[in-house]
Length: 393
Image (cartoon, rainbow, N blue to C red; front, side):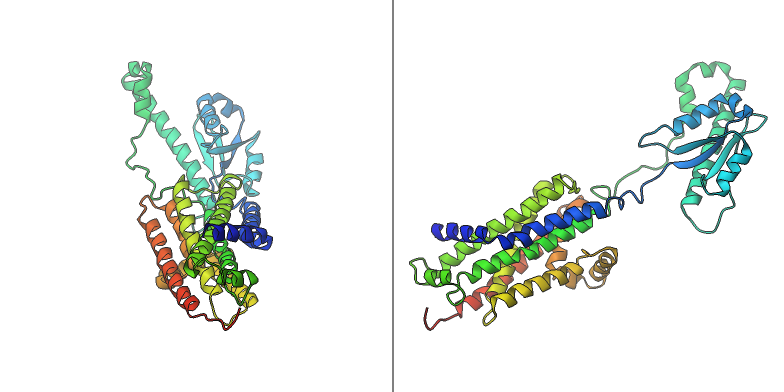
């Protein structure tokens, strides 16, 4: 049995064409995704608000307001403003009319900050959000300035205590920021998870080739094994074990490339991801065994069935772009049973469950579905294989 296992491993490793689909294609596609989705995640990221500042004589006298704007415009993750200086109001208004800035901040003769914006249109967009931010900054500055002036009138000594001033200017938040997901959602990761689902199905060719090589009517190797001393049950067990090892190895390499080269986020649950790959490899082996055991079907037709099934099921897993992802989500909501019968979708959802949920229950549910389908495919395959009889070898 050990010799059969080693022989199957050697036979599969020598078949270089298998690794083009099982390993080369996922790596190639994930590299393409890296460039395709380079700007996808940044598209919804917050950009500093482009703001015109009129740096005239009045502005030079308002040092405190200038310091506030400079602090809000400091480069970094929390940069709020993109300040653009203009010498006169007329120059700033031209920039506003050309949509180069979201608003104009200036200082009047009394030293009061003024905000000028263009007429607002209906609806909620980036322009309205930027104007709201500028309005909030201006109102907050005016409110704090008025508060400090009142404190100076009522109790001037209080201003000598920096802690008291900070507490007076700070506003206690009435809300608490919490995350409803295990990791911050990123759009692109779902496509990589769907790619892993497709990779699993393409790896079915390994199980198909291995099981066909055990059939005496399809290969000389199968004929020699049929008349050998090793029982048919042990031969099949060793063959399937070798297939699982090759499939699992290919999936782990593809996963490692996505994780460490493409930098796909797996929410720090790489160990659970490896377990999911092991279960997916088991299903892949069962699926290849099922197609390989179909009677009266040639090898080329079986490989064609795997290719067609992989491309079709990957479509409904959302691999081919945003419209396909929306279609997959709609099917999952309206027809959950159909989504549960799509192994590419189940594999992708297993990884997404780890990424999205705190609990491991959804992840365990997806693995359970894969194991049930695996058991069913192995059971059907055993019926086909047991009924095969050969008049001569």
